[in-house]
Image (cartoon, rainbow, N blue to C red; front, side, top):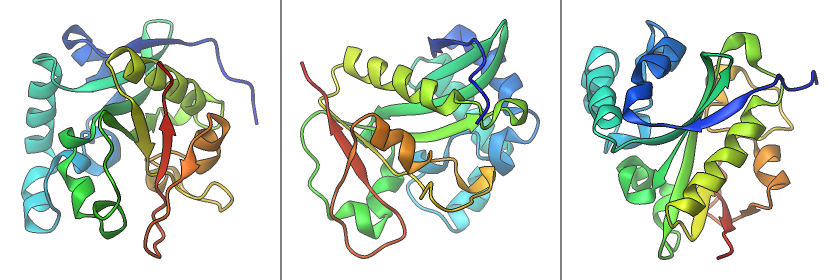
Length: 194
């Protein structure tokens, strides 16, 4: 793995919308998602009506009103990475995943659920830095437990399918797997110290 570039990690503020928009590009990061996948209550027809331009409008409204949480990685003045986080209730789709909806939801539960790295910066440790910055921000906001939904990092996975982050970066931070029904979607959690 190449070494991580010199980056700075900045928590999202409404005035950073132009930088986030530029990072996501005209396609909205992942085929028009605009980081709305977990924020829409269900998939199917509702998601088909939401992704693309409607998702961009909704996400921009959340960002510019200060309702969306996240961290941007900057190389100079250019955003090269994104990580979304927030209280679990901000992401209603989590409760539609069979493996997740039956798990206990402790007080102060927050979710880290989306990573997007500029193609020229992938494989260079940016996601690790984003995760560390997101955890620090979650703690500042009062989170007591943080969960993630990583992909198996022991298998070769294309970037389009690794948007919830590789399992190994969560394990390196002390996240532990939560028992769930048999599923391909792991759930990991970390209890934050006061």
